[in-house]
Length: 492
Image (tube, one colour):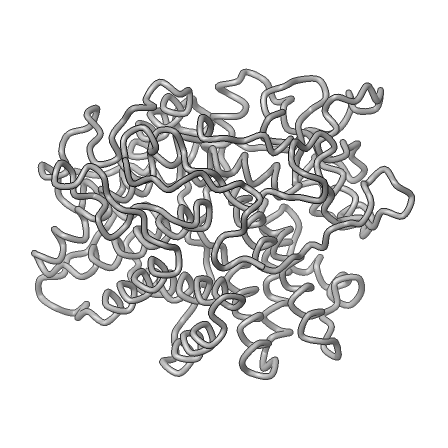
């Protein structure tokens, strides 16, 4: 049977949107009663549905969260859908759906793929399942710091799995990726995934690159908390001549049809029946406009968009009514790791551990790729790379990391993986925090500001999500609530 990417995506995305409405808050992450048991399926059937779930959440609920907390967008002053989010007024009653979905229809299914393919010695599916399990788990860990892991996914065998700390989970995920990469992919038991692979269409070389790039990203996340381990892990990748992504690891094939479109577009525009909730944030808009960066049109549809100061949704400023909407497209892909991000990760690794060897060229390739992704061209990046975005070759390591991360921040709008902008700022502190609000004449375009209507203590940004009620009500081992201002284990 020919498997259509669009048909695979449609049902999981539709289910994801329904779950987002809050009607499944008591759903057990160990078994979703609305889906057949994975015991009845094969890796070829289970895998694409699991990937679609991850895409629905990373590219839906979490993309909206990242767009606001990453200061790409802010709540419109003419509506109210995301006021609590923009004010950092988030508790366990919100954002249950991504946590629940990524466990019950994501991690549970990836584990089934891993177990079944291991039994059959089908190492292609084993690698694919391991990479997507690691990616999905890493996103959850970076949001919550602790999650059920070593005792999770056992069904009725353990309905109260313990929570493991983020560092221990990272270590195990990296070990699992190494194990998967070491398998014999030429064994007679290995099968071609074909169209059941909705990420790379069965190209296993790219899955190996995805695995290596994910390891590189995870090791770089560790540089603050575990610098020696981060260095050793990255140097091992280079010693082993690891190949990294030069194409996007992404799910595409979306169309402008309900349930078959980009999940953020479906959730924020089609389901809410309005394009008006997310407007241009002064933070990002001012940065791009100040530099005459053509990517501003990709974001906001204009070279001189009106914008709203972050979190200023209660204002009666008459200009806010015409503030540019955050442009969203029904056919946009959902990106897990982009080629541009891969180049930026490699540039940082080269600066930290290889005296900057090839760092500039990798940085330039990242910027060029981001320009190309965002409706411009790689050639259009040239004058910027010779001007306002010139790599600080003679600068300090901090200046170089800042240049890399700020460009990475811009690139995350492509493929709606805005959540990575939030993560990277927590890791590096870039873009910088402004000492004044953006209405002040001394404001520097692109520096982050505290939401005007923040409910947090002065000077505080959110750093994580609190454990959701959907977990607390069913798992007696859920830890005590940790404030969203508490950093996760790898953050600054």
